Length: 193
Image (tube, rainbow, N blue to C red; front, side):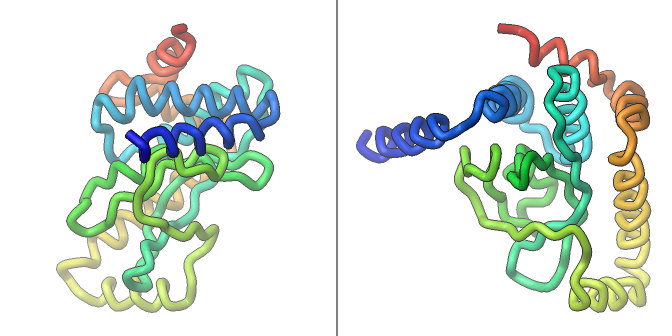
């Protein structure tokens, strides 16, 4: 009980430091986390959740930046394509704790405005790949077993980075979700009290 109480005190202390706009961001992110990502055990949705939260907050008049970059878990030089939301230099990343392949990638922290609301492995965030990551990727491209995956991920990253530049394109992407989890589905969920 002491540990839970200490954690609650940390979270309450963090919330007390937030501006009114940051409170809105944190509350929307928390609702998305608690109403969809955690109960549905959603994986592989970093782009969708980032674009969704960006568009939803824009409807509330809050300007954020969807970032499509890379993360590194510190175990090697590999950098994984990933998306997170930026606001005044702070990251909101709701999906790194839900890795598609936890056997390959440690479960990361859930960050809301840089605060770890769920503990996990600490990743580093990067806008571009390091030289070491690029060299490692070139090695993988030379191997028939991994080349297809590397090319597929590279293409996906480039496409998502392009989408992140346009609210309209992000919205079309979300509204064409094959699983029917469209922007409206999520915004209605977030609007519920």
